[in-house]
Length: 139
Image (cartoon, rainbow, N blue to C red; front, side, top):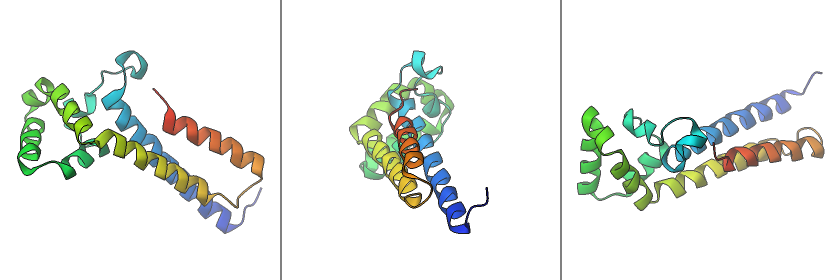
């Protein structure tokens, strides 16, 4: 079925936004998820030295001293693993997790807004349910 170019652009924007929401939620789950649900140890992104959105947001609001301390822990391979729980606590304390979750939900809203005029209401409702499952997933 041929779609108007505007629908194709809208669906592309939807896909990009929902993909971002999924990735951000995955990053959040790395800080809050349980190993049995994620099928990987929580904090694995920190242990690998990955700068995900929850960590970036926490670093943005931290004092210079605390930011420097956390960055020092992350830069050292040995220190990252040793201090993963301390880094996770820092991210929680700085509201990095909550703010990243809000960013995921914002991406989801943008995605749904992009397709507000595409397809029928039943399809949009199904996509809305799908998007909600992404932003609220536990694994």
